[in-house]
Amino acid sequence: MKIKTLILYLFFISTIACSSSILANDEPVKPIAPVKEINLGQVELGKKLFFDPRLSRSGFISCNSCHNLSMGGTDNLKTSIGHKWQQGPINSPTVLNSSLNIAQFWDGRAADLKEQAGGPIANPGEMASTHTLALDVLQSIPAYVREFKQVFGTTEINIEYVTEAIAEFEKTLVTPNSRFDQWLLGDENAITSTELAGYSLFKNIGCIACHNGESLGGNSFQKMGLVSPYVTTNKAEGLFGVTGKDMDRFKFKVPTLRNIELTYPYFHDGEAATLTEAVSIMGKLQLGQNFTQENNAKIVAFLKTLTGDQPSFIIPLLPASVDKTPKPTPFD
Ligand code: HEC
Ligand code: HEC
Image (cartoon, rainbow, N blue to C red; front, side, top):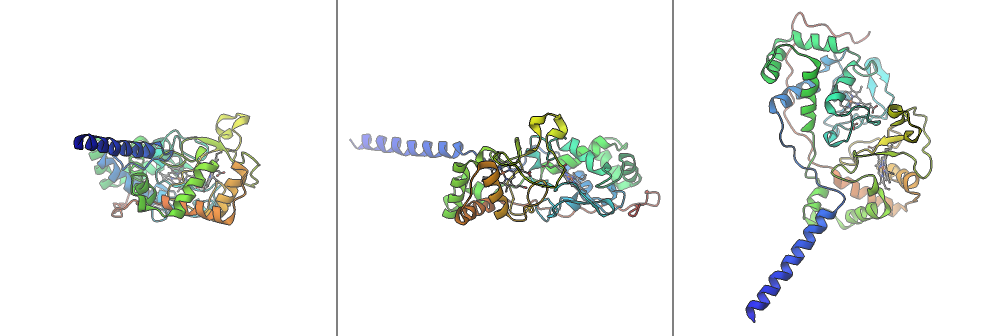
């Protein structure tokens, strides 16, 4: 009799354990996995290149200027500032967790991080250099030549190696361990009841249809202004610019909501200054919902639980230029 009770008890416990783990696995949001399988030599080199303003014509703008790792991987500006103080055409998305995106840029025109990294160096509105000039700078600096030799086995630096190293560094910029991920992994006390209520609303009202997976976004292109049109003076037309198909007009890569508290202002035109505003616009334009102040605040509270561990490392020391290194030309 006693044994029977014990068996029943064990059965009961194991069913509960199973069903709760099934529930956790069923959540449409997944925790961010820590980075693995990384080439450490490339990462260290890529980190230097990410911070090196000598890849720009001015010698002043680095990747980190617009994707500041002290500020959530963005510049916190409506649109970025490029060479000679040019006003950029679009908001700078975060580089945090960008390795999880299905493609890069708001319109997805770069397939992956390696392809993306060559763009800004030669973009006249951003770093305004050329690949030839940037490579001449690197090739002139003996410490860089040595490091490329160590990592890629040759003293001939080319743009493939540069972009590969930067992309490898960017893969380390994941942000695991947010309070929400702790909750997903079973720590019930990691988020408050208000934040949990915000998550329930987020799921039940339909935000989750587009913002799901590890990144709560980054995995599909969706129309901005699904229920009613989005009004903006910004000229970007999204995926249409890449495919030329009318149905792709105004479809943008759904942004990740990871670290969203840090990556203001919001939308491709940077026109939503606060999360409250962004959530309200999303509710109206994507789902035809007018949130009460209280419900909006709950969703915002949930979104703030998505800030994870920020990349943390010693600031890389860049090797000094030498006499023959091409000089920066900030004003032309
Ligand atoms: C002058 C500011 C500026 C500089 C410098 C800059 N970027 Fe960007 N970056 C942007 C903007 C703006 C976008 C979005 C452009 C678009 O979607 O059309 C972007 C997009 C990206 C993306 C795509 C992210 C996503 O979610 O789609 C990555 C990755 C990225 N940049 C990495 C880099 C790297 C690496 C460098 C240095 C080689 C760099 N950026 C230099 C402004 C900048
Ligand atoms: C139909 C798909 C879809 C639905 C549903 C949706 N979104 Fe979005 N969301 C997008 C797209 C696309 C963008 C980018 C729009 C742009 O920049 O023009 C975006 C942008 C955002 C941003 C700004 C991110 C940034 O970095 O700029 C936030 C915050 C956001 N959504 C939250 C929500 C919330 C909260 C809900 C539910 C009320 C929601 N979204 C519902 C597709 C969707």
